[in-house]
Image 1: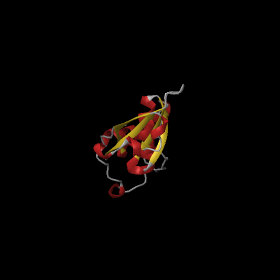
Image 2: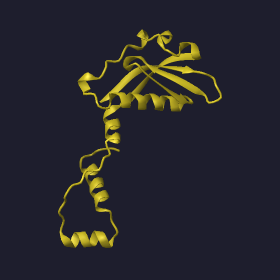
Image 3: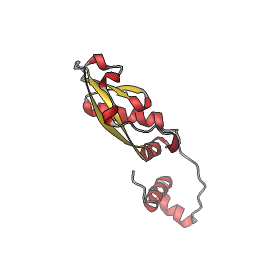
Image 4: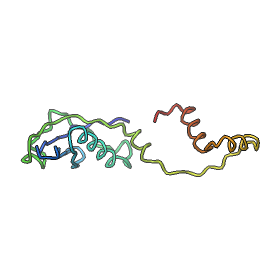
Length: 138
């Protein structure tokens, strides 16, 4: 699921090239250093706030034309503009859910010996094979 929200960025023009970020639809605030980092931080904040929500409970995005920079708590802190920021929430959730799960897998003894002799990490090989078989992109 991809979400796209209008976000208000405020450039403070300080020595760190700080951008203050306000996401009205989820009432969220963060900051970034440089515009590229600001977009990254906006995506990360959105992901963190939406991570555990059911898809049906994710707030609907406002129309960009309905967003007024004056509604930002940072309005008086610099020059502001509104831009869309997208996030692949499915990929974000997958990347955050990296807790190892122990699975008991049976393989023939000869195959286990061959893997040990080749110094293969069987868990890693299994993960790679599952990702390929399920056609999951990292």
